[in-house]
Length: 142
Image (cartoon, rainbow, N blue to C red; front, side):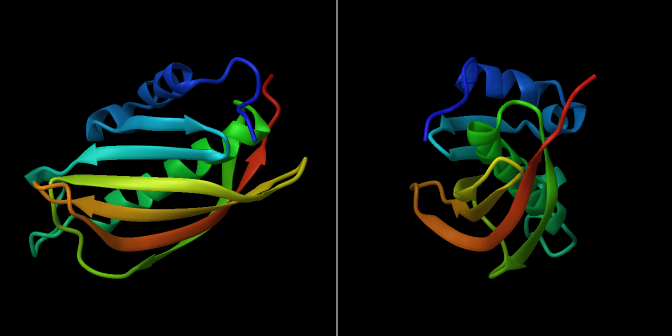
């Protein structure tokens, strides 16, 4: 699978940067194309919950956007998340959150996408902390 015409990593980052909440989190797209996308967020104290772990809402945000960007590589630039579920496997700690999503199946009307969320330690060790799966839908824009 290749990204529809005109979609590349720079365009994906531009789309992410157009979301004020994504800018607030400092999210970045690090891979985009071929039915996959990766989103990364540097972990900082403001993103923790009361026990010092990365807040589950940050993981959900990362999964949602990674799923949608991966779906966009096969459905085109105008897509929305139709729905997703997430399972938290262990508390998220580390310096970077990485959400890697890959299209499992794509048709004309939807893409089913899976996302693995890892935290990276200072030495680069990755720890799986959550998994998500969802559907991405193409939308028409006025």
